[in-house]
Image (cartoon, rainbow, N blue to C red; front, side):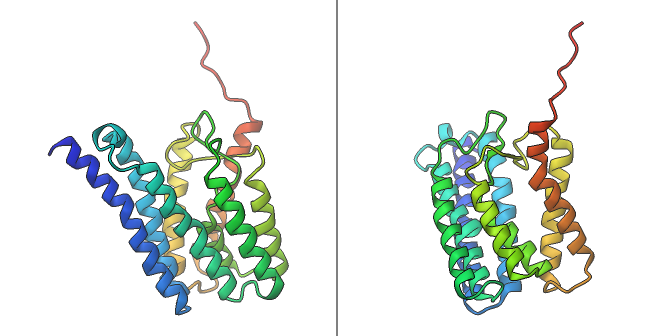
Length: 234
């Protein structure tokens, strides 16, 4: 197959995320959170595979008509930010003034973060919390903590977007990738399982979500604290 066709196919895969976001939004409007999260998990899988494919087939060179980075950011804002914020507000996890505060800081802070040219570090990690609200809100649905805890998490992570804290990229951060990639896959499996079971309490998926989320949230910061060993010069 022509390399240009392969590059175009990658763009089309990325664009499919917009359709998945619409499916998720339709489910959210109906209050069908289980189905909404299943669509969002599927969109997350698509987002996880299109990047490596884009680099493999060098889409900027082989099909430069479409800007894959811009396309990806548009889709990511819908699936990572807009729809999860809506779900957090309309589900009742946060209501009244707390809900308003949450959706304002999430949507406003995230659009600023997405436009920040410094959002990636030299090792391809994220500088600051990468506005993965789809992952955060799914875990909040699964654990259903108190409103105070939820509001604290939302505000803390929003502030974290603009701090020089490193968060690992599941496929691009090379350091500890032998752990990060399997943990990321585990998170996706547990997220899909939890949503499929309609976030039933006591599910093994809950523990998998908690464990994998803790790793993904702290691995980058740990890398900042723990110096990387350099190979000895012989």
